[in-house]
Image (cartoon, rainbow, N blue to C red; front, side, top):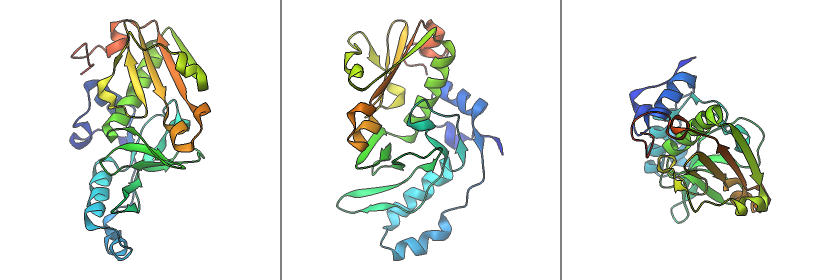
Length: 225
């Protein structure tokens, strides 16, 4: 194993996320997927989808990050395997190996979204980069917040976001991050969506943040770039 930050991985990430991956990410060896191409073609998987898996695996395969604060920590490491789906429904492929026993799988969607699949598909972020940004931001916010409050279920509806702006770098879809004058809020709704279980909604509220806590002290103060 070794510290893990290549030019390919760094592309598209903010400096905050790059520093996080460089300091806390490691690389483990994972088997290449190219050896399975003929087998997958014989199963009816389109060549273009196999190419997508290979590209994902080449860039992200073997990346180990610290646990995320939701989804029981997220994938143990990023990896991939046989795509699932059809031309009509679109194709998904695995995003990584589960860290713990969860009732869904981490998947990459038809347009590169990072999400979870249980009873249904729930895209969390528009890209893998968005997922990495969210884990990096959670790690950063937890270090610098004076207080962290967790609310769940219907209590999430009471979290007022009118004075907050979306944190664009996480590329949120079902999951979103919000930045206020002295706080950050992460809203996790993907588990509730994929399991048809609204009680699984959760929000983490990080309060008492100064400029460093809000933006990571790097680059553009508005976006933390």
